[in-house]
Amino acid sequence: MLQFLLTDLMRSVHIVAGAVWVGGSVVYLLVIVPALRLGEAAPRTAALMGDLFRRLVNVCIAALLVSGVYLIVDRLNSTSIGAAYVIVLVVKIAAALAMIALALLQAQEARRLAKRRGKLWRLAPRWILGLGIVTFILGATLTGLFEANILR
Image 1 (tube, rainbow, N blue to C red):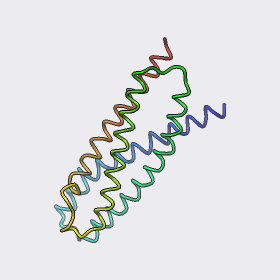
Image 2: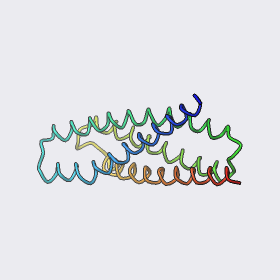
Image 3: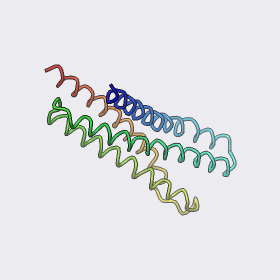
Image 4: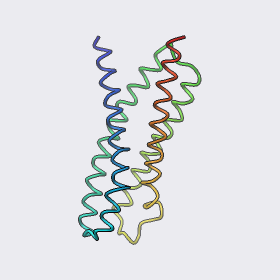
C-alpha cells in the first residue's frame, strides 16, 4: 500500500511540475511578453518577471528530475513493458534533458547585458515550449503503451 501511495505521489508531482512549466511557458510567451512590450513596461519590471519565472522553472526542474528518476525505476522494474516503451522513454528523456539544457542556457544568458545576448536568447523559450508539448505527448504515449502491455 505504501509503495502505491509513493508511486501515485511521484506521478502526481511529475504531472503537476510539467504542467506548471509548460503551461507557464504558454502564458509567459503568449500573454506576458507581448503585454510587457505593448505596455512599454519598465525594463526592471520585465527583468523581475523573468527572474520570478526562472525560479519557478528551477523548482519544476528539481521536481521533474526527482519524480522522473523514481518513475523510470518503477516502470523499468515492471515486467509489463516492451521495446516500444523503452524507445519512447529514451526519446522523452532526451526531449526533457534538452528542455533543461535550454533553460539553463537561458538563465546564463539572462545574466548578460541585453545587447550582448545571442540569438538563442530569443529562440530558447519557443524551443522549450515545443519540447514541453512533445514531452507531454510522449508521456501520454508511454501510459498507453504500459496499459496495453498490462492488458495482454
